[in-house]
Length: 366
Ligand code: RB5
Image (cartoon, rainbow, N blue to C red; front, side, top):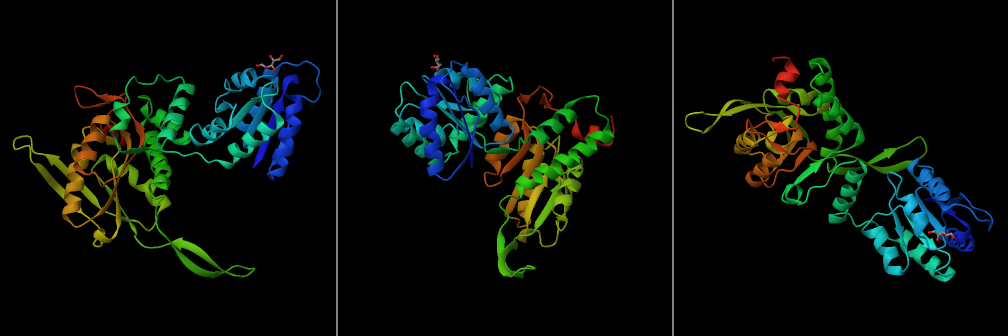
């Protein structure tokens, strides 16, 4: 780990003690100044340290001024910085465990050298707890993106969904939402996103030990073992997600399923289903770009389960809260992965803002 450290004249004495502690902990550091007691402006040093972290040159940071307040406020103006003003051991621990802070700020006029060293040891020795705290950090990131948080957490709290919001995916989803994106580009984008999402969906694939010999020596290493993958697109729009997954998992077998709800009887009707012969021994990833009401996903998974398949995941591009809740309720054992969780369904059961009818946009049928 490499630590960026910076201060103004109010923190210069404390900086020396902090560097001693960093060295004692065995970390590397980069000292961004100031280097004398001459009066300087703390925002500049907040900028140097924040930029070192945002650029990836350093992993975490320490900022010092008279109180630790001003330099911390300045650092928090930088996107991606979570600077915690630390004044006691408990705050040092919580800054790491609850806030995933990447900088701590302390005050040379309020914190002794011994205290600062103690807080540094605690902060860098503690790990982010994730879980509900990760959700809150995500909310901070949403604010950074200029989004307004909803008053209630109703839409996320009751839902069991993994939103794969890697910047590359978020960018590509935005391109797909644009109504001017032509079918050729729409298809390519859907394929690319499916490939990127498959990386996350397959994150828990089991590994087994293998003995191998490198050019240097024999060793035990890991390879994929256990369950194989099957991909089942829900016809027809799901077809657009198959090639992306296949690019990442070329050995996956492909099934197909088509179903609809009979308008008169309201009963689910399966009009096509062909699964790999050993489907029940595979992890089946059911794919469909849009999870709107959840109707077709629920039906498709019902039919797939009737064939004895137990290990099922559902992967879509854009989900509506209504569909997520319905699918969670009908199949609580099926994890849902989406590239975006949108606001709601409109009166015509289209996802808002969504991207329109994925099937039509994929195949140019409208
Ligand atoms: C400088 O006198 C002082 O204002 C500064 O070090 C810091 O305490 C600001 O918050």
